[in-house]
Length: 373
Image (cartoon, rainbow, N blue to C red; front, side, top):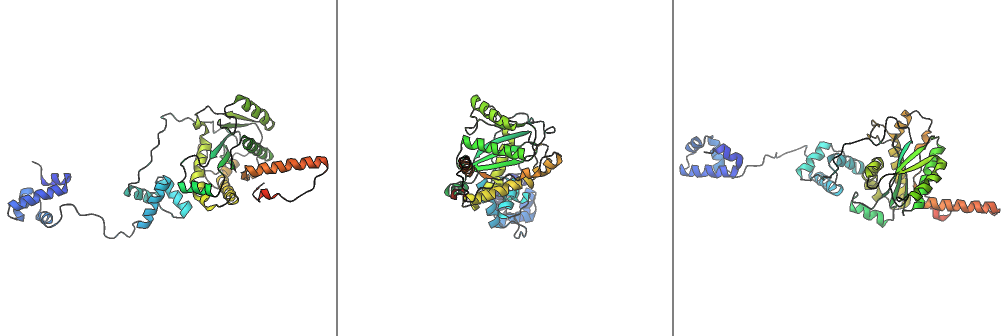
């Protein structure tokens, strides 16, 4: 026969209903009912006079409890961004200056039933992409472009803001594997011309700052580069041989070989675009914020990637003890359309100079003061 305590573990309300039936058969005698069910008389009285369900054990006064409006904000941002407690705590600190312990954010998400988004990954053994211990700065680099509007990494209102104010839609990145130093440019359009211009400018910048030795650049098969064409790849490598550099495309579908630059794009979403894009109403403002983000990445943001040990890219470059100048970190964030205008104006000036008709003029209005070099 099941006892009162065993029944109560299954259902408190059913246990109290049983107790009330026994109490009624005993003519309301509390002592006999308690003796029959092997419980105390106060238990019988509580079941007789109280409700069937257990009372809430929540305290009446919780001075350290997170305020309801703050808790609502945390839940709202969690659903908007898709972040879990650790990334969400950092995001709230960076964007709203709200410092919450990770455990507090975790408890709020659990209390409000915010579920974790799962992602399927290949069950493969992890293998390093490079021999990181032997790498020298700028010996191996990864090149990629990011279409800012192509995925759902950002909230919908951020995408709408970028389109409304006609902010740049494409991001160009080259990142050094050994130090995680990164060079960035933006554009409104995706073009193979921009790809070659960006690559040339970065290589010139590296050689001007005492970077020696051959440069290997890993990239995907995007249309802005070689697009899987061996002929285009050969032409690009013939041109890049002047810089002692070479391109090495990855096989189709092997995006894990671009993991370092792809992870930097995730940091762009979380630490830059998601926070600062909505604060920019013009391309000029966007480029200023982008320059500040690149400076933060290169000089102040610690990296915990393989062989980085929590150092910033600047600190990692110093530990390599090379003759590379530290000014290499101060790469100007470019808008490729402006760079193309500058290149065209420079070419036209050379032609006039050769013809003896060159007259210095003011900066064209198209520049709009956004060229940073």
